[in-house]
Structure formats: C-alpha cells, structure tokens
Amino acid sequence: MTDAGFEPLEWFALPEDEMAHRARAFREEAARRRTVRQFSDRAVPRSIIEDCILAAGTAPSGAHRQPWRFVAVSDPGTKRRIREAAETEEVEFYENRAPVDWLEALAPLGTDANKPFLETAPWLIVVFAESYGLDDAGERVKNYYVQESVGIATGMLISAAHAAGLATLTHTPSPMRFLATLLGRPERERAFLILVVGHPAEDAMVPSLVRKPLEEIASFV
Ligand code: IYR
Image 1 (cartoon, rainbow, N blue to C red):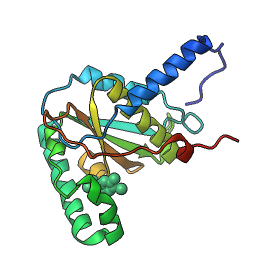
Image 2 (tube, protein in one colour):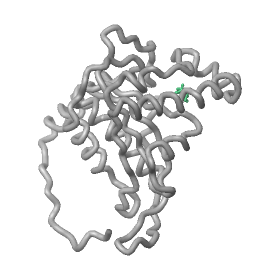
Image 3 (tube, rainbow, N blue to C red):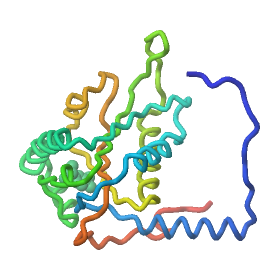
C-alpha cells in the first residue's frame, strides 16, 4: 500500500499567456456542463467509461489510500433492480420523509420519485467509499478523509465524462444501503452516489439556473 521512495516531478511549465488561455478555456468548458435528467438510450463504449474512471482514480486522497470503488453498471437487469429500489426510497422521501422546506427547495428542479433515467442511460457508475482498506494479509488498514477523497474523485469523474462529451446526473437516493446489497459489495464499502452517464435525450430540458458570481463564491485577502 505504501509507495516506495520518491522520484523527480514531471512538470511542464507554461508561459503566463498560455496559462490564462487554458484557465479561461477550462472555465468556459466547465460552464457548459449541465446536470441532465433526460437521457437517450444510445450506447457508450466501455473503454470511454474506463478512461473516465481512471481519471477519477488520479484524485488526491488522504494518505494516498484511494478509498474509492467505482461499480460501472450497464446490465439492464441490474439497472432495473437499482431503479426499482431507488424509486421505493424516493417515494418514501417525496411522500413522507422530506420536510416541506426541502421539497420547496427542489421544486424549481422539477424532480420527483420517478427515475426512468436509471434504466434509460447506458451506464450507472455507483461510487462507493471504502471506510477502511485491507492489506495483503487481509488486516484492516485505516483510511483518512474518506468523504473528502471520494468527493474529489467524483468531481473528477464528472469532469472527465463532460470532457468526453457525456452528460451526467448525480443521483443520491436516500438511504442508499440497497446499492451495496444489490451489487454485492463488502461491508466496508458505503454507497456515496450514483453517477448516471450517457448521451442526453434529444429533447432534454434543463432548469434555468444562475451560477453565483465570483464575488459571492470567492474572497481574496
Ligand atoms: N434524492 C432525491 C431528492 C433530491 C435531493 C436533492 I438535495 C437534489 O438536488 C435533487 C433531488 C431525488 O433524487 O429526487
């Protein structure tokens, strides 16, 4: 698990105008990303999903424990079972569990308990957080900053999918315990979220959102 030794950093220094150009280009590309809720059933090659997951796996993590596991689901039967279980939780959420203020906050997004995209989209990447690891002898190894590490990796996964021309939706059925059971994951893995990945439906609509301006999200001191 421990990486042996050190090696020289591989680094490509850029002139400042090139840095500015790339920063702006990345910002503009990031701004084009939208969370999509209507997916096409158009297939996406597994190799593209593998590259996105490998990009996510380059995320920094506490003590370099890499406490993530990505289960990429394309099997229609498994997707159907995930949809059925998720919708059962969501009906309970929307009808009973969610407080009024939460439902009000969600109203502009137009979400409800119906989750057809869990079957329509070609890929569901179920992200698991490993609460502890196992060493070669099968002994428990402590992980650190698990939520932060998996959150960063998920952000990179979303960015990688967007860069590959794919639409995504972060879906968080609550509670999510059924995912570990359904996918046969070990006790030490906790479902973090489902990333729905695919092409948007041709008639996909997205809510008109305004992103906070720099002054509201940043302070320079
Ligand atoms: N998990 C539910 C509810 C939901 C909650 C939040 I916070 C959202 O930003 C969107 C939906 C669902 O997926 O519908």
